[in-house]
Image (tube, rainbow, N blue to C red; front, side):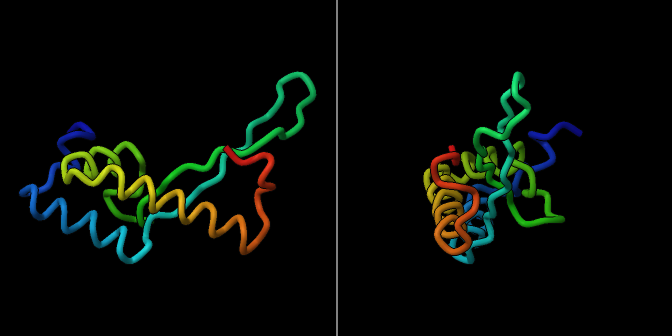
Length: 101
């Protein structure tokens, strides 16, 4: 089974409802990948990565974003992920804003 067939919803309506629930319930989280300078071995920044709910077929971006595309909700998913990233930034002051991409 390929990733594209593993996330194919039964219908466009069910895909839209599934993605809409993720956005509405703020279930799209951020994972932070450190960016390391290979010469100094220092962390120079962080890349924020969107993740769906843990343990679901939409957990990884390879499934989440194609499902959002199929539901015509790519913008909503991107905005939701961005909002979660900035909310975490301001609540916990991590990762440093100057280093977050």
